[in-house]
Image 1 (tube, rainbow, N blue to C red):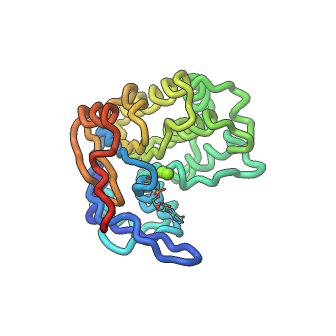
Image 2 (image 1 turned 120 degrees about the vertical axis):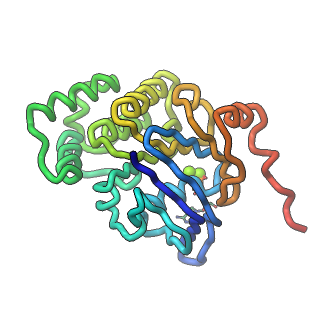
Image 3 (image 1 turned 30 degrees about the vertical axis):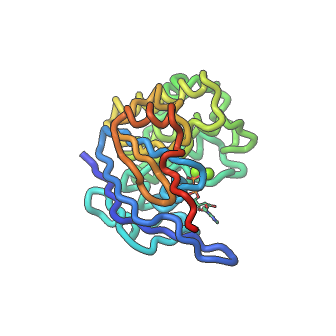
Length: 253
Ligand code: ADP
Ligand code: MG
Ligand code: MG
């Protein structure tokens, strides 16, 4: 059993002109086997939370803690976070020129396990995972993210997750830009990994649509860099019906 614990997390972003405070005290606990949906309007800080967990250099943690089974995640380098069992799609480069999907995944797997996977098992695992995600075999020989469609990027994300077998996965807007068929395939992939390995999932999404296919245990509403409300799956239904308006406070006079 693994626990990702976020306590009073405060994060700022540095731009050329300003130091902007974005997360203002976030508390979240995600255990193995649990799916937590993080929902909220655009600009509420959802991606900032994902970047902070990933260790993106642009996002400065100014307060609070992130631990994985008590280990200080914030003290870990980006690679160590993956070794510890965190899966953060955005930590991988947008494009990896000249590196095929197949080589990229094998290198990542070797790095995470500390030894190269047996070739025969690896080829079989990769083929199986690709078939399950209904990806053509030729996809393995394409260069990572080069000319990938939105749907291909998302499937590649889930393929990585299936093969790397993390303990906790942070999926930021995995549903965006997917048609309903691709959405179902991606959701099935997440559910498969959950069932097989007891993965804990932080599912960041603006829309409730994906929650029809991936049942969340908890739903957290992000407003202005904080969790404004937490609840069970019924909270997502309420958001679907009512939107985020009731959380928006009147502007200060
Ligand atoms: P969400 O994912 O909920 O849409 P974000 O975390 O992307 O929200 O953004 C939260 C706020 O932080 C927004 O006001 C956004 O403009 C700002 N922000 C996020 N990243 C950066 C950045 N790299 N540079 C400047 N501002 C940023
Ligand atoms: Mg956004
Ligand atoms: Mg975002």
